[in-house]
Image (cartoon, rainbow over the protein chains, first blue to last red):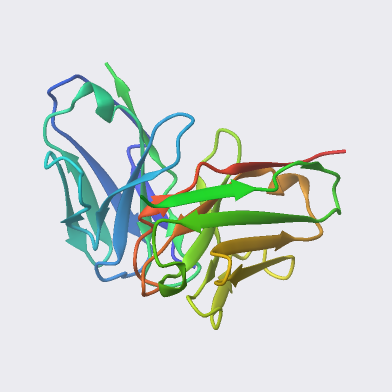
Length: 107
Length: 120
């Protein structure tokens, strides 16, 4: 199975900051990587797929990059509603797997 | 508007069985792959199972293989998860998620989940 390792597991930042979350795959997954945002008590929400394609309706301050084994999610200027947990997911092969999550907290 | 509504989550004893359902609306159900994903209390997301549009392909996570069975009824726009030989570690919120036409497509819509508790 392909393992995904997200870093950091916790991130403390302020409104207006630019933040980057990294996701590393244990083997190459081409660009079959998605990013999700989850707020407490809510279902995950798709942000980015195919490593860098923004899902419809997602603000442009979110961006993704990478291919192969290393990927990043960047939030350009943090807004109050962005404080949540973020997960990466690989869809290159089954079982598909999620990273362990990065909890983004307000500093 | 796409809607996915899960049901069937209850408290069940270890070794017991349960069937979850997911009612879909707002899209052409039989065009898309569907998934179950679970989240144990306070933990991360764990993919459980996939079923292709025509039920011709199914995949399972290692932790549920041989115990869970995914199915769908396209005439009823419904997805199911039959869960047997339940264990304490199966306790989780179970989400139904809509995939794409291909198995590499992401999960673009999720239900709100149904809670399964395995406890004596």
